[in-house]
Length: 310
Image (cartoon, rainbow, N blue to C red; front, side, top):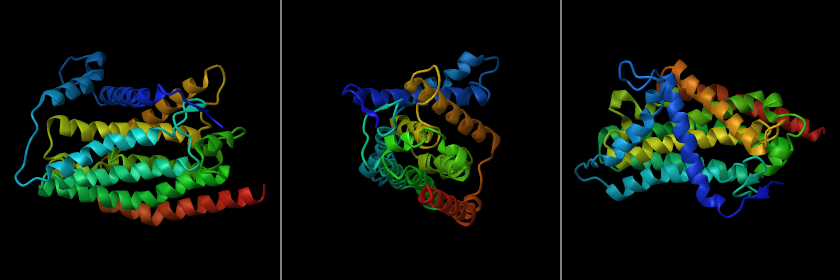
């Protein structure tokens, strides 16, 4: 079982998650071709997300007629909050802020909270475009939640526990990613969808002027877009204890391996965004219902048979 983190780790957690998200955004900016200024170097490209964040902090908030401002801002604020609460059950090495008996369920519940939050953010401005973005994310979340949930519970099934530290302990001889490849792949794919990232960025699509974020500027826009990076970072970090053996590895301390594996998963997700176009919603939702759900069920059945015959 993992050790309980000291009390000071609670305020450090959101700071660490923000630093991870900023580093991921900087890497994405470098991979994506820089800062947009001719002749700018790698350093200018890497600092572009930070400059954009500071610009949004100084920008005036936009208002729309008859907006439900309170509800919209609740949704905006819930996105980063859900990401931080989800990250609370991720062990850093063999230490974690919280290790509840239902840690996997907790993580999944926080993701569901995030897609409800995005819908609220789309509803708030009383605008057609942002409302379309919110409903797009709701449909996307419903399609990908089921295979995502099956992938999560398959790891719990292999460990015969929903406690995250026990899932890590069950991978002492072999990572779950090795004998549960379908669940691992579906987890990564659905994690990208739940973060409305890359090819699943339809809720913020350019065809609806930015969708859920269309009517937001300043701090409001920063909360939603920054929250998306936090969600992506948290889901990448959670794949480490779930499928990649947690903090186990030679030479480096446990937290070092967790950091290294999280960075590797994040790099794969970011590169995938650059390689794949944004897809039409009906295409990837049909793929989720017709392919991913049966695939994860077969994977869960295989794991159940293995567990019963141990």
